Length: 486
Image (tube, rainbow, N blue to C red; front, side, top):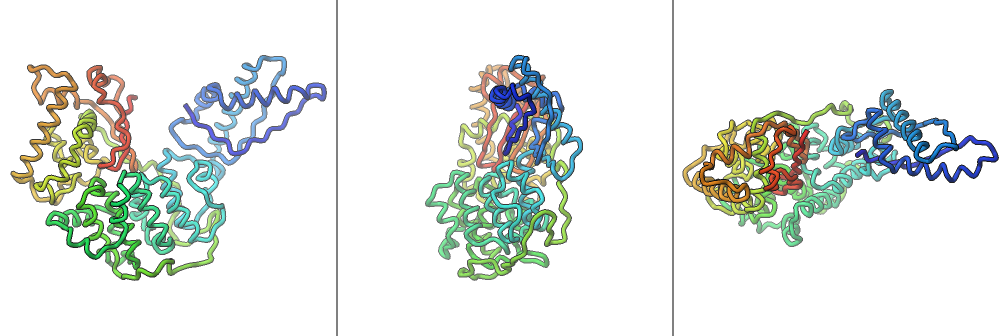
């Protein structure tokens, strides 16, 4: 069903003077037209995509109605006229029409464009409930509103910042947004991950004594984080790196880096030490009393204003997508959650030098003999198709780690046998294949993964076990996972 939001509605009737009482009836019919399923059907008939976020600044529609007809007939005719007008505006395009494939794409476009100083699409962002600022702002105010908007979408914010970093825009944000803005964004993200208040304070407040909490494994974790995270790359000293000159900003960015790359660590005791270590690398200058950005400016930006010289185009469909023969492997995320395996694996000393992404990736390949770059194995670890496998450049699996993984594997199989009501005659390997062997397309965007399966892949036993229900938000992966039958 299409969700239609109309900010302002103005109508004008042309009718005979003696028919003026029909105005109230037509008002009622118009409201029914917009709220009723008839309008959804008319939009579908006109070819309006229901999966996109479509913003149109203004639509003019003219329709001739016969008051002698029943209300239902009037509503149907009005619905078709409105839908056809919308379709016409979409086909013509232009600056008054903005289309986003998803809300995540709209959020990234908002953050990138506002950081660059172009608010041409602010009206569209506002219609989507993303933007609360004006159409004309000082450049720093625009950037602060961008960060505030990310804070209102905290589950997406860490990965959205990673996109900004890869496009070279994060230094502009860090130099323009005040300390409290970054702290608020990091705090909102931590709350979205379910981190309790006492741990939030420890993560965000710089503490010189926390360095002593770093265990032997956290050094390896830090290297992995700094090697993988584009957010960390941008804030690590180097020829084109951003220099973070405030400890609290570095701390907030370190939290967001951890949530982007290894979110499961954020709720663990080791997470505090890792955040401290990343922040130390980022904060190349310590100036804790500097509460304002150094480049305050009165440059006002609006439609078409540019302050960075970078191209500003609406991005193409940049979602990572690939097919796999083992899409049902992701059904086992329900089993992982039921066993609370992420917490168990993170607490195991044998895996202290490894990231949870590495561990889950290894576990996926243990459950099924998959290539390390198989999209299902990557998604099982919260990584988009085409990502570098967690095993890349890592030491090989050792005997102690293998024993822990085999123990986790046994727990998964035991639970799976129970919920799938497997018989004694069915081997463990055959059971896993029965569940996991499903052709699927994995489509990933920021913190949103869709596992698209053919309707022919529906299994009554899998459905009865609840394995193909949407897992939705998975904190230890930092993504929403949805199963879609097409």
